Length: 82
Image (cartoon, rainbow, N blue to C red; front, side):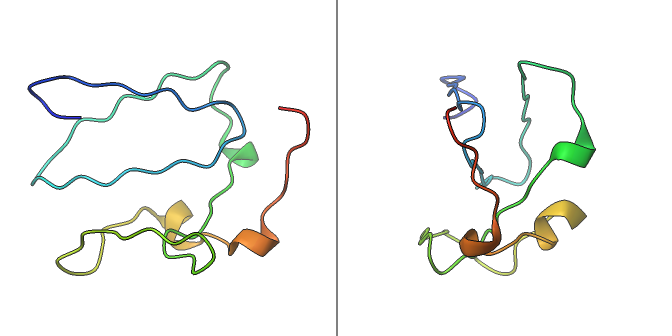
């Protein structure tokens, strides 16, 4: 995805997802199927050794507090039937 092609992607409800900006700044718009309820949010650790992602980092990432508190995959809730 880029500013030129204005790409989009859909994440199904209950599916872990993440993104990283490779530029100095990025706009991210998130549409949901219901009102935002932070008390129901969950965060999988971005650097989880079980879910191997080759992040192209040039240093430490800038993460919001909720993502800094991300849990390992084995500690995350599993949602059945989504």
